[in-house]
Length: 128
Length: 288
Image (tube, rainbow over all chains, first blue to last red; front, side, top):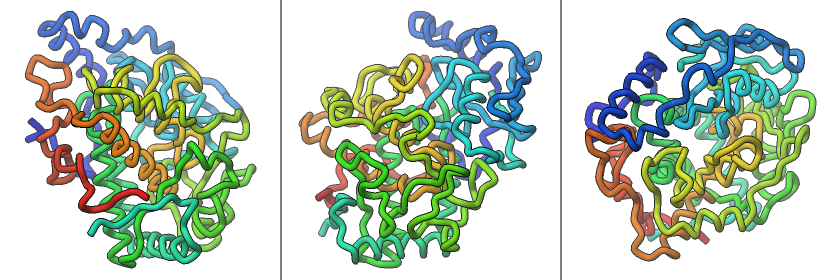
């Protein structure tokens, strides 16, 4: 039931890690193997390597730590990413479609911004 | 007596003026930015843990229905004659048609910085400063039709693909389902590129700028778009008599979606209301 999982509109949605997602996937897999066989998020290797490059004049950097968390910045400002159940990624800039890897989502965010338009500072970076 | 939501293309000059003025007053009072923050806070993705209510979930439609009613109530406290208009994007398909006129939403963003410079929500008018946004700019942005790589709005035939679905939603109730009215309308597709952006999602992309991001509510176009999406739910119910919101009951403890979606008779955060209570709002409003 919904009891206990409500959150206030202003509650930050952090603290959820990709490791938790994987652990949950493992638990669910034990309970419903047929269902989760094709629904567990893809392995981290598919997300691509860390990157640091210039796309259309904007510097995009993405690093993955040992726990598999991604941190992506655009001209030094954090670009928050979310993950879909099919393993693809969407960003705060481009929220109504998703991309195969964090690098693709970062490039798409640059493409959607106006020239010189900067992300607002003070937000959190990638939580994944 | 139910009030009527009208097609934006049919509004009189007086109806447009009253709607715009009520929106500007909600913004001036500081209430509007709370709507932006609520939508931001409730956008949870299905590849992560936690309850999803607004997107990638069966409650996409009732969540936005209740959200629209909240704004409409705020507008009607200011001017009881105002109702939310809807934008029929299957018919008004260009950057110059309704609702992109100077007497309603204003037009496209300019090329240099995507800033909207016409209509009541143009920054220079001083009434629409963006305070809760993804980017630093305080001005509303749009890129109608995505000039650099043009895309088209969804068509009647695209909408028909959703309306013909006999079931409201199907397991696993997320963005990966390829059947069911809800996701066919919400528009999470599979594969890459523009073929994977459908109906509701594709319209957000077509408008671009603020409407493409997590703070899409900053563009008043959000409400006109979602009123048309809401109308589709009513049309789908009329076509599939007796078809109900699904799931009827919550997924059990062994289900991967346990505790992650809202079933028909569960409360739909942040409100004290259930999807069932939002299935028929004919006593509150109807569409013309």
